[in-house]
Length: 116
Image (cartoon, rainbow, N blue to C red; front, side, top):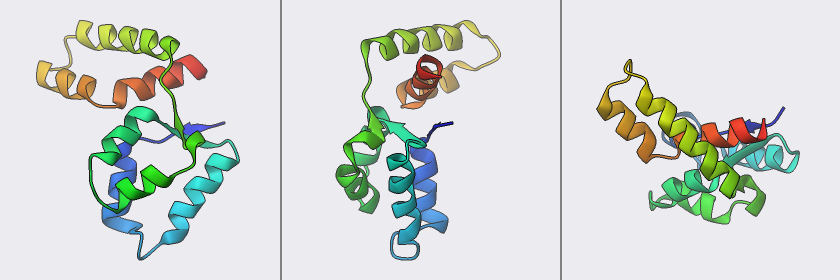
């Protein structure tokens, strides 16, 4: 089963336990698992990472093209459904909804829902 990874998982890995200078094997493993068809992310996550202007943004810029999946029209349509669902649920406060919808998160959900 393939997995999608979020920017926060990569950012936390870089900042806490798997710094590039300390554990380059982790980053090589991510690329290897992508090559094995088991690990992906999205172009929206890549955009978030590129905004960091650090080692992680360099890594994202140089990662294999297949690691960051493109957002297709079907994904955009699915993301609209995710956004509508989030907005319709009163158990989430509006600031949390706005933050969730402004990031790559709803596109990760949409990719997962669309591709299984």
